[in-house]
Amino acid sequence: MDKWMDNPWFIKILALVLAVLLYSSITLPGEKATDEYVPGGNATETIKNIPVKVYYDTKNLVVSGVPDTVDITLKGPITHVQTAKAMKNFEVYVNLADAKIGRQKAKIEIRNLSDKIKATIKPDSATVTVEEKITKEFNVEAEFNQDLIGEGFSAGKPVVEPKKVKVTGAKSKIDRITYVKAVVDERDKLKETTTKEATVQVLDKGLNKLNVEVEPATVKVTIPIKENSKTVPINTVRKGTPPEGVTIESIDLETTEAVITGDEDVLKNTESVRVEVDVSKITANTTLDLPVIISNGITKVSPQMVKVNVKVNSQGEKTVSGIPVKIKGLAAEYKADINDPANDLINLVVNGPSTAVNGLGPGDFNVYVDLSNLEAGSHEVNIHVEGPANINWKPDKSTAKVTITNNA
Image (tube, rainbow, N blue to C red; front, side, top):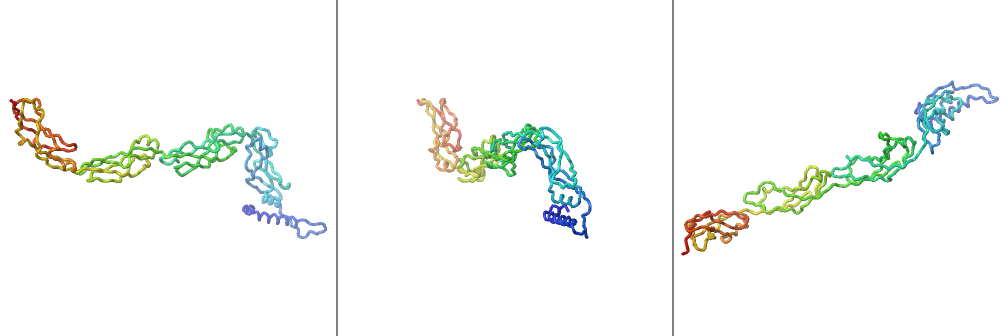
């Protein structure tokens, strides 16, 4: 039945039927009432949640305490009650046009209702507070959840436009204002500077929302987002042992620096990244594409891959024969003869990079015995060998037997 009452066509038809019934119940002068119809009796209906209008000086005052809705019980002739219930063409109101500032009791009234209907309003009065309305300007503070910032990014200070808003309301509420915030509601991770519309919230010190008017009600909040990055050197780290006979001469990177991205605290403690070169399988000069390895907390590195040039020397070995043993340091009054090795010659077994070893001959080495401070007689002295760098050698004799005699 209530759903029918809410249908405007049903209400119109019902009103027409009631009007016809009322008309048919009236006997015109000179006419004889034959089939007289009188709608039966009285009715009582309760209508819930009827809005309450408040009349007051809205320009200068603020009123609180008036209920938003009331319940009304209508009692009277059934046709009048049903019509009033269906049409709801009455008004429930509180008249505070002449009210003074302060707390007071106000009567809730009804008008535009048929005088044949008795109305009972529940509640029939309210304790209201009438206050002075004031407007004050406040700075707006932007607020957003720091967890929204994408990993490896940081946010600057938000910019609010406009920076100030006008707040209008009861003086008691304006005096309670502690925070005026524009809260950015965003679900996606922020990885670039973002501008959002945000509703302005007015709160007291307990973070309770205050019922006031805000102009404008929304502001634009721009959150500057930047990527945390740093340039660091790329270090090479050797892994493994070169195959036998192979020497790693050099490892050179074509790119020596990388840009890393991550949280600011991680970047502060990161001084380099690295490339690991496994030398255990390298037998010749080669160029490798290797990944740049980053530490925990670094979210991004550029470049991710670098070219590494590895230069090697293969090891070779040979015997250099017939190297003469020279005499050094002999005093002028003496002469010396080398008795061993025979013919004053030794042999060297040399090893090192093949490119260097292959071309070696006796003239590349200086072999000698030092007879300084020795007197006439037979002596056994060490054989000294000098040769090219990066070459290893082993003589077939490490000592020589010499005889020192006077020149006279």
